Image (tube, rainbow over all chains, first blue to last red; front, side, top):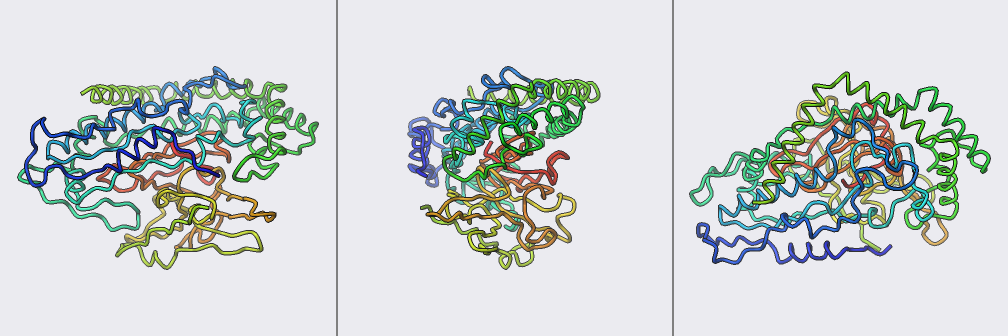
Length: 326
Length: 170
């Protein structure tokens, strides 16, 4: 299957290939006259956003549906902003030491879901137009992605960026040693420029796991309600009428083996039947209603903790947006 | 097609004999193989070393005295189904099933719906782990680590613990 690269990806590869050499060459930071690579992390406009997940589905049976807990979740847009700001601040910090690194922009490998709730696929597939083309799979551009590459760093860059002598890439690697305390007479920050960027942005030790935990619980609890159990049974009967024996939407993708590459006609037929049966039984609306009801109660039960998380998220994203303007 | 990436060998390490535990493709029967990384599948193209470690145990139960007591599998990129993957090579359907390595608890067991925690060792790639195959159901976010820090190690939440089925870049 041919690998497709977007123009943005090619541009990033070219930028990082022109790479990352220290332009200090033993001198302290020079003033503006020296040509610098424009920090790529700043230009989120270079990233192809057409593949980004929508905040709320705009097509199919989940169109317009948004669960209560989503108001407290970190979104894909948030994480891109935070990653871009982190790299932007690191770039500025490194430049203070006369070191120049081009970090890649964030936002190149979007998931199919804007947040933990995964609305387009939360109750299984819901978009008939996608199913007709891809069965249970995703469009090519959001499958088999290449990932983002960090540039290779010199020893100096690693020490100033991390406050350590090496970067740990695997749990099997030994813990890195601490870097010397200065680089060319200038003190290295604790945890380097990366740690300093976290402190500037307020992003150390962020933990949104409560929201995620609650969102998972509401899905499994709502599935067990009589209303949803009845709807699932009706869906299963509908699928039987199409010739498919399956108990739950979560098992429908296993009826026909999904192989890498283009989906088979059989897989597409199942996927389309799956969605049509969801429509005729109103399964998505019924499940969403129970899911929402449970989440409303969860929010009441955890209001102050959730509010604190939402405040933190607003603060850090605000800091990040401000930093990106500098 | 794309060549298979070799996994990074562990250097002098607190982990006992990790190098001895790299399990290459083991034929179960004709046309079906077991691997401990999706990067070992011939048609899967990993542009980097596998960076998302799927641990059999939760974090608290994974180590003892500085060594891993759990088994794990290593993934990279978008994985439609932790059960494994199939593709026709000519007229033969070749199937690769994902299993944990042989380090400790959970040795050589199938990965899907069987993990307690995830470690993200990437400096740049965030991941999502999903309840159902084909990126369905609730999902949990596993961010990349900071440049100065260890791999991000999260327990799977109670919905996904032993109920995890797919992963995707995020």
